[in-house]
Image 1 (cartoon, rainbow, N blue to C red):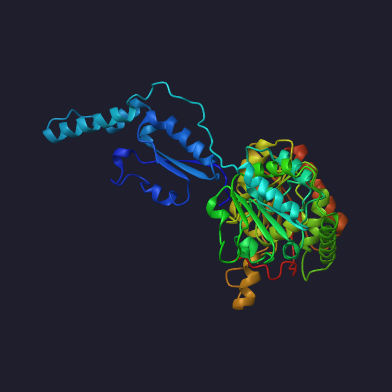
Image 2 (image 1 turned 30 degrees about the vertical axis):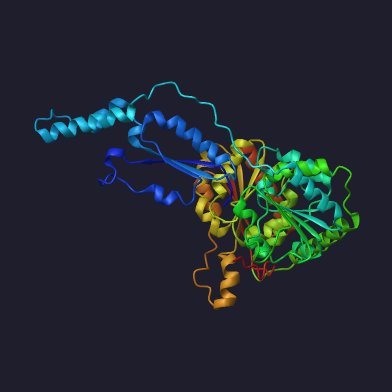
Length: 497
């Protein structure tokens, strides 16, 4: 669902032992086929390279996604070891023994047959859908006729082949206000003049044309019910199913194009060179942004019944974070608040798990981000619930001397769940946690721990966050900041179903 091109490699029992009670012998294909674009079992050594080439191309083609290749252990071990383990050590004497021996010998010969012949190693071509120029021109004509156009940018927009920085330039050249979602957060920079962050529902009601650039009419857009019934809707998506999701029920596209969103934006930019969006429309949306953000800042000044106001901490963290920061989102309620306050610094500087909302991605995402961008400051924004899933990665960070910073919003609760469960069912069963010392756990793994507690003023919070960031850089050690937070009504009523 996150549309990430991932190659997953799995081991398996030797082919000749399938279904005979071998250790951990299960039918993995039944599990992975519904989830993966491509699944294959390698049964002969000579097929390893061709199968991997197909899998890697499939992962990146069309709508990117995961692929799974299963390797029985007899395709991974040496010929001598497999020969020794599979063939009987004693000389066969009886007819059944002789037949079994020759069967197994033929099996080994098949596994390793033609194994060392030269193979084509170059990558297979990646197939991507692109919008026809004539269709992009139709979209441009519809945009020219509109007075209040709006772009809803989704994760597909930052996928190759068009570079995210180029897409940013194209969007700025077009000049239409944008809402950014998923991995496209940060595409227009920290303070992009076209980036609108707040009151999206109001903007959609007022807009007379909406372009879904890789965005999908799922729960995030209330299944399409958020649009003005008189609005012209243009939808662009690599995936045909996602392109028409819920169409005909709650919304209808005036123009639906299956193609790469980044390439579509590039096409639009070439057809809208002399186009100018109504400045009054952009100013209206910006003024609403400022009003909402002022309201959020006023809520940040409220004092909760216990511990710190999470909005206050997030506003100060936003000030402390460097221009070269990559944000990892791994949590529910605390991360939901952070999405309104923290501003990704540029394209591909916000990483999240996609619409499935998988908890536990923080440690792995941070590890990959730091290795790919060693000079960047990597901040994981954790909820206390999600933190428990990947905090052991602090051992990995410590061993490899990777200075990752984690900010844990610790309210001793699965608050995202409690927000709907308690009002509806009148019970917090299964929602409550403890105010755990996660900073101590990080120290146990070789990292550094800090606490943010009730009674700390703005300057003390700022000093602690700044010190944690500086010490992490200088020591090459990971840091966890355990932020004890109280309850707020900032996200009251935020139910996603």
